Length: 375
Image (cartoon, rainbow, N blue to C red; front, side):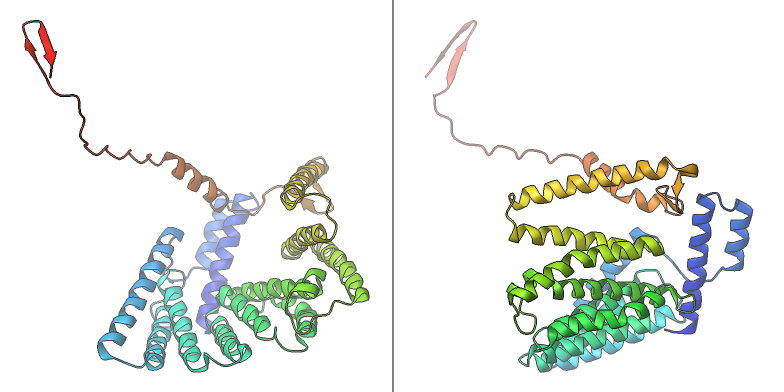
């Protein structure tokens, strides 16, 4: 990532944090204005709605133009994809460089097209090769795009493709366990380090979440018996050890997340805990799956309500530094779902289709002056 992109993102992150501090009444309006002045930048940034609109339009126009040129010029698919990818790379560099459009939607669409065209060019040559030959180049390209442009979705895709590429290796399950354990501390530090660009911190957090999912999938007893991750290992002693780890790993993530005040870790732990309960249902048939899921959701809601009341009852509505108050959350982002539901409910209902005219028997009518009849 270019130094100017990282610097612009740092300034943007500081301004966003200052607005959150002002909403929490930690600073006043004068301090907020001073921070925004000190950390101002001239990058072009659009709102969320316009970013989505510009993104969709750019992707549609880029894909349509590439298909049209390839059809008219009768170019080889690989050559057309490589040429389109090079053009999109240049467009992304220009939009994020001289034009300074870092959050406008145009640059993200151009980067996505560049990545997709590059992957398509590679796949057109290795389509019938083994899966690891097909997926490994795509993982490398997605990782390179994440490193250069800082989009977390590319980093997550690179990690997913890496684990998918290694799935059919004889030692795949060992890779799925060893790689997350080896990278855990490094990714956790990178996701919080002030020396790392904000976008790269988000990329590290995304890769950490994918690695946690791979680790859980590798030790889950259901995957040992049914999923083709390396060699299938269904020995009784191994299944018992796997069941124990499936119960302990969510608890470990929750404990580390709560102790270190890291929301990402306790979110991973909560998701892994739900997955463990669902796994338990396949081995201990206490009730139908829908009932287990409904009961689990009810218990989770009850636990959340109880935890909130416990935190609110403490001095200053906090206990041991934990609080349920939304101190630094943006209420605008929080209410997006409510606005969407409200708009959907206010939308006019579709008018019923007009009944098509059809023949009706029974004859006509005649008469006048008070007399009438039919024929």
